[in-house]
Image 1 (cartoon, rainbow, N blue to C red):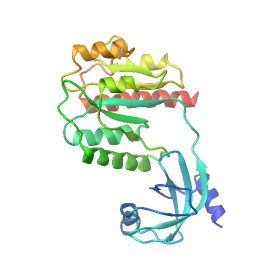
Image 2 (image 1 turned 180 degrees about the vertical axis):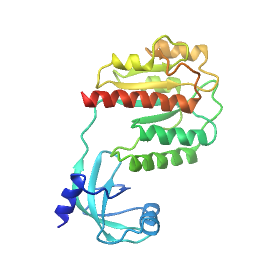
Image 3 (image 1 turned 135 degrees about the vertical axis):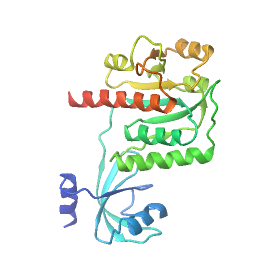
Length: 255
């Protein structure tokens, strides 16, 4: 009967609740306290019900609740699957906005399928996120992956300088820098890019990148691109870049 449940889920007949698991290697998986409490006290899930689990690294599983405890719900794995790997990927290197604007930015970029976001330390930046914020953003990325039914969670990196990001960039990655005065748009730049290219977009602080920073980026091969006809705030620019990239990826997938 459990195999039938798994098959029904696979064919879209049911949409069970999704939860993040640290690992899917074992036959019985125990969820952490926060997710267990939500499942039991808010969603009112009971033993015997079907759930979907994902590990944030590309693996998913269908399972049956064994013990609905608020401090550690246990799930028996019924079937597993590895998500089809996608070529390419987007990394956003972004100066940190103030207050809750950064939380919103992280959440929406994660929903749009951004592979990684890195807080950028730059000359005119005024916010340096601490460990507490980084942990909160990683939780938000997990929740966004759960909500948007993605099997891979967007990674949130530690704050990094421009030189460090350029020094450690992936070989062959396409580099772009958001510039409201650029002649080319990000959409045009992506249309001419290979479908499996890794992309990295740099977005500066409210005062923009300094002349030295722009020169450093351009010398490293970054192409200035315009995201919109208007001047955007940091978080809006990040989400705009992620949206354009996601639409480009969707067009490729539909070809």
